[in-house]
Length: 283
Image (tube, rainbow, N blue to C red):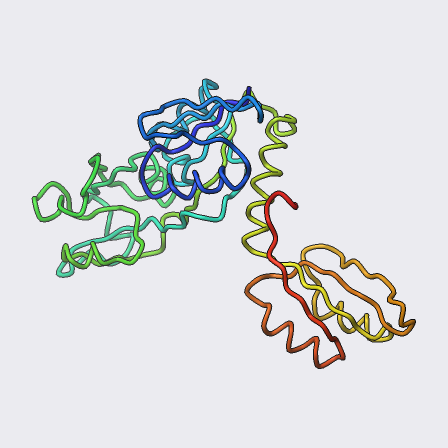
C-alpha cells in the first residue's frame, strides 16, 4: 500500500481532506482515527502533525505526504517536492515594530529574529550575508518583541491584521511564497506507478476546479476563429453536423473566463453554447 501522510489539523488540513475525498480516497470517520486503510485504492492515510510530515516522508517511513512548501524547506529533510496542490497559499516575511528603525534586510544584521521556522530563516539570512540570531518559538511569535525576547519576527503573513494589532509592520522582500505541496520520499521513484496514480487523481481534482467543458456549434469556415478564441486545456474535439456547413465543438476552458469567451464566440457566429462542470472522475 502507498502510505500517505495528511495534516491532522491547521489551515492545510480541511482542504487536503476535501481534495483526497474528491479524488476518490477513503477518509477517517472520526477525529480520533490516526490511520485509515483504503484497500480498494491500495493506500493508507496517516493523520500527522503538519510540522512532522516532511520528517516522516524524508526518512522514508511514509511514502508521500501533503504539507506546506515552507514546512518542507524548514524541515531540512531529504523529502522531494512532487507537485503543487493549489491551496494554502501564504507568504513568509519579516516584521518589525512600527517605531523601529529596522526597515531593510541590511538592518537585520546583528539583531534577534523570533520565528517558528529556524532553518528557513537562517538559510535565507546566510544566503544574503546577514548575521543575526534566530530565536525559536512554537507560536505567537508576534508577542516576542513586546516581551523583549526579540527585535523583530519572521512569520507567515496572510492579511497582516494580526501583525498590525501587535504594532508590527512587514518590510523587505518576501522570504518565501508557500502553498500546499505533495512531497515524496527519496525511496519512492518519481515514476513509481502508485505515485503516478495518486498524481493523476489529484491533477484531475485541480483541473475540475479550474476548467469547464464548453460545447457549441459553429459554421465550419469559422472553426479556426473559434479555436483561436478558446485554445483550452487540450485540443478541441470537432465533429461535423448534419448541416454540412456547421460543426460541433467541445473544448475545456478556464472557468474564470467563461463569460468573456461566450461573448467572443457569439461574435464569430457560434450558437447553442452549453457550459458543463467537470468532475474529477471524468478526468
